[in-house]
Amino acid sequence: MPFLLQHTDEKTSARAGLLTLPHGDVETPIFMPVGTQGSVKTLHPAELEDLGAQIILGNTYHLWLRPGHELIKNFGGLHDFTTWRKPMLTDSGGFQVWSLAKMRKITEEGVRFQSHLDGSKMMLTPELSMEIQASLGSDIAMLFDECPPYPCEEKYASKSLDLTTRWAKRCKDWITENQPLTNALPQHHFGIVQGSIYADLREQSARELVELDFDGYAVGGVSVGEPEEEMFRAIDNAVPFLPKDKPRYAMGLGTPPQILEMISRGVDMFDCVMPTRIARHGVAFTLDGPIHIKNLVHANDQRPLCESSHPHVSRFSRSYIRHLFRAGEMLSLRLLSFHNLHFYLSLTRHAREAILAGTFSEFKESFIQRYNAKQTES
Image (cartoon, rainbow, N blue to C red; front, side, top):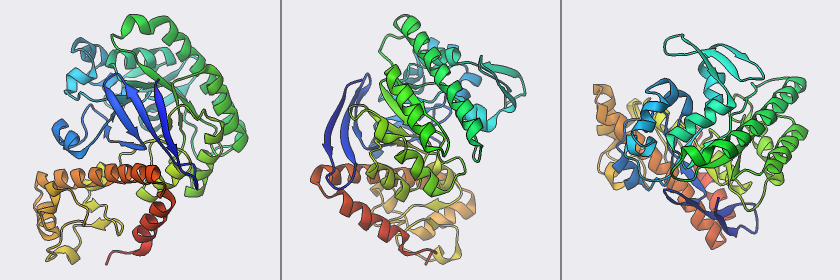
């Protein structure tokens, strides 16, 4: 995968880079909106482009179960099926099997489970995960891994890691044997560093994956219930052992301050359902921290959600958006989802600008200080 490292911050490990993918270039650091079912909830693809989204995420598990990867393949892949023309990353399905599936049983072959949709018996293996993602035609496909729970004993984490490494080798073998036959465009593949909270296991996982030589590397098994400091340690214990000339991805996190902390540790790519999930509950991100728009304090508030709001949203008052939520209007969900994704995409864009300007450390401290200043909503 062509990855150009353009600049590294002198005071931190923050990086600005450029990913060249089959469906376009991606400037890093980057936040990837999550389109679980092939759609970022409540938003039109044109709106995502208006927001400046450069790459979005699709979910292998969900798309496999419904509508099925063969159907999507018949449409020419996920890009044609969804009409999203820019880069796309798909996860492996391993996390969803861990978090959603019923009666899960992990074996050397793969994972047996019951579908969360209808209870039907399913089996997902490393090879099948790669086949599904090849059919989807994403620009980046994630390797199939086991995500250990938190907390877990070191013995379990070690055994789980060994299985993940063996599965990574099987993914590599499948890619080598099959990719030229299944993809019109090249597909890039990221290994996933596991190891729970154990520093030696994180290092072991990173070194083993690097030896297998993938196009990029992710840190998985974070934001699964562990304290924030353990999340940061997982990154600290993995990133130093990953190649500097390949992209690094922290999976499934986090809050705006957490993302800046991860960027300062040398992470390039992020995804999280939080912006759209909490939007549906009436929570909006602002430079002064999150606000709950349904609260009475906003009933007569003429201000926009935030001084940095996109013009698409800033025309509306907090009072009006609160009214929409109380009235059950769909526009309320759309506006807050649009706003929160704009907030996250702006955050990584401004972080990139600060890295290139040599002012990232100051930008990070200023942002976090203001964001955390009001512990409770005023």
